[in-house]
Length: 163
Image 1 (cartoon, helix red, strand yellow):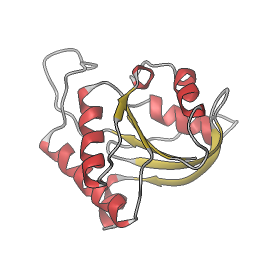
Image 2: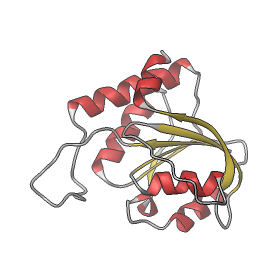
Image 3: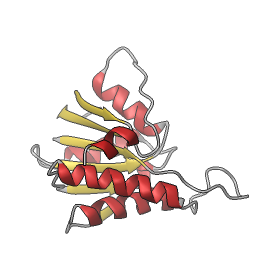
């Protein structure tokens, strides 16, 4: 399985609590994700499944990418992808997919960086996934935790230059 792990684009600030689920992408964030999507499209990426956090900024990010890649499937909201979500629950979701799947996961920090670190290291390495940054992991096992090999770790600037 190839796991494409994407952090949402830049989100607006509101007077509400910083973890507010209604924060949306800014116009800059939307443009970052559009540029990223064009890079993925030029690489010929085809998605089999898409999972997103239920928070608005993550859903908007997933919608931009799937529209650009002409993904016909459903974008599935997964509660365990919320910033405080349980990664083991999400790994269980992944374990039910076909081994040759290409899966897009859209979420938040520090959840995503921790997931990447768990997947590629036993010694607790630390990855810093920038907003609109993406990692690609070739997953070799999903339970009890995912294990795999890091194939990409790209910033938005890298992804923009792929086009």
